Image (tube, rainbow, N blue to C red; front, side, top):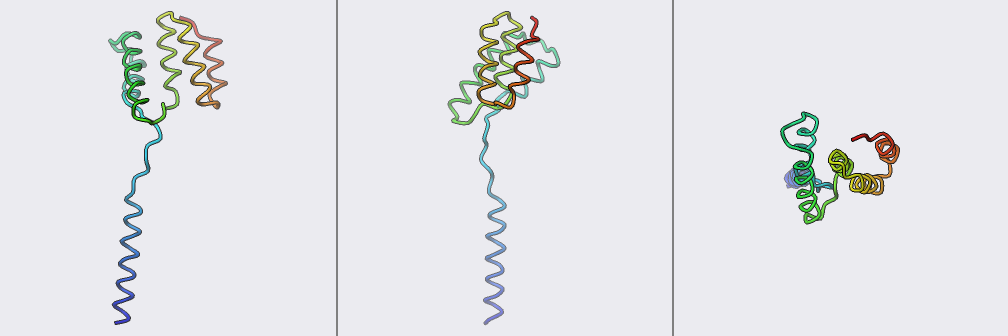
Length: 118
């Protein structure tokens, strides 16, 4: 009887440990098509900066609707796309958003702002 109780307790402990390992950590960021947009940008795909920015704006609406956070670098990349289109106001706005959401990016965002050339 006592050994059955020990076995049952060990089995329950093992089951609860496995159940705890199976739980998934909730996502912090919603990436949507961000990775694909970065890939298209760096491969100089057939998508124009305008088309890429439009896709990112659409994804930004989906991210906001999901209730998750915008991932690091998202606003900076969107700003670069606007900058390439010649819209320096939107470029500056997106870079400022990136700096406010991710203060650790300030040095790099300042570098981009100083050295951006269309």
